[in-house]
Length: 156
Image 1 (cartoon, rainbow, N blue to C red):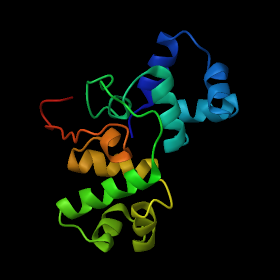
Image 2 (tube, rainbow, N blue to C red; image 1 turned 180 degrees about the vertical axis):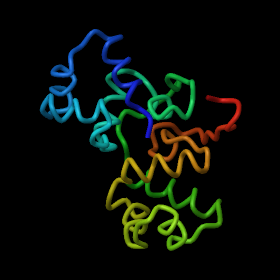
Image 3 (tube, rainbow, N blue to C red; image 1 turned 135 degrees about the vertical axis):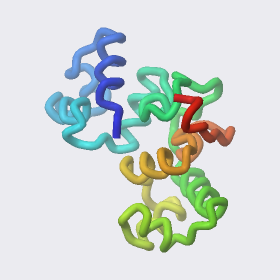
């Protein structure tokens, strides 16, 4: 993943400390420091909070797009919508749950739980899908309603 520099830049641009951002997330400064330095991976729920706070898209944070924010963004992630979008993506790419699980090095049941809206997709799996298939993380999470795909050579 590649959000390390962007997180630090956004924080410094807004002139806030790691402690202040950590308080917004409800975590310790050292935990946030680990996120900002990519020692630990940011959970999607924290990514969503940070994107709302910095007024940016997940795609921008993930360096999938130069688009800093989208016109109409849902502030909350709907587990059911995110699950339906993942299932829609999988079917459009002619992937079974088992095949997607193999690609992500996880289990069939993990994919099934995501698609049923029982669990929110992990940051790592979301990032892998979005970079491999050039699809918007914001769309898959239900933060935007317009389906966006990226041209590998054009949009970054």
